[in-house]
Length: 340
Ligand code: TXA
Ligand code: MG
Image 1 (cartoon, rainbow, N blue to C red):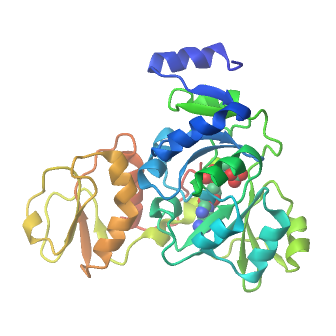
Image 2: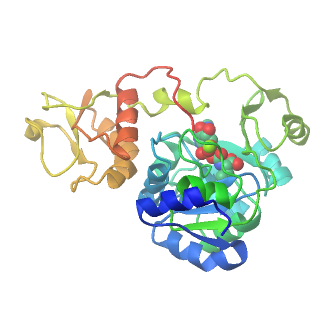
Image 3: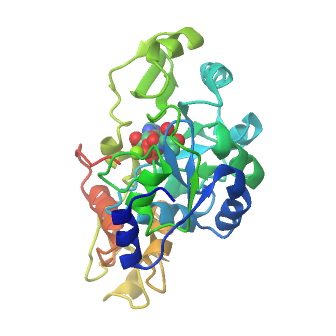
């Protein structure tokens, strides 16, 4: 293998080391890992992605966990064909035209999530929209064979440079993965361009592998470059997953009229008076808790309680991202979240 000795040593210190298989030999192994909810680093034409089943909350939680210091930014769901895409999201005419022009390729479309979309809410961070992309090459083949969308952020840990070779993935994440699929250096080397069709034109949310003017030409509509609507950058999402109810993290008791978001086997004082209770993970498993977070907050919000008391969640591993999200839900603000 080509990856460097320092990375190999670091990985060995942590125990396990990822297998690295060339694309020609990797399909069956990658499918087996995905089928049991595991994650695999795969090449796309843009950058390497850290892929997991986008319909499986535990698999998506593993992605965030592997990125360390995780923030639950919404992830791109990757599809193999239009039929799969249309099961997940609603296409407006301009988005359909852009998909026809650029897919498979380095373009991501932000679309309205379809009712009953099988995409897990951890992928969308609870947003009513989903970012979709149809990649080419090995990733495309893998999704087609798997038959389900793959959530895949760039295969780098938080704060690290995006990986465009299998060696770079191995040096960064080799101790946290079972399998890295080696497709050589990615041809584009830059993440996809993310756009969203709006009434007055196509908004560029992230510049990337397809030039904006090519998009303007293909769409036949104006490009909107300034983000005036305040969502779209990873750091500006707080208000979008804040529930209607107030959120009281790290609660030591449950007060009259409150709903309870529990964690672990033991309840805080006054839990019996909660108007509704959901437990993120009865066995205290942070991965399971992460997978439940957005949907359980929404469910408790529907109970009509004015406040959701949240039991303490340890700030280790995925707990850091869970607490980050809870804090933002408690005090929505225009923070500058670290993107990843
Ligand atoms: O080329 C790429 O796009 C690579 C490869 C692996 O496909 N993926 C990638 O994913 O760059 P990631 O997670 O590093 O970046 C995804 C971006 C984030 O900035 C996120 O905020 C944005 O997509 N995003 C995802 N869903 C969104 C949504 N519903 N609305 C607005 N932005 C969204
Ligand atoms: Mg990234």
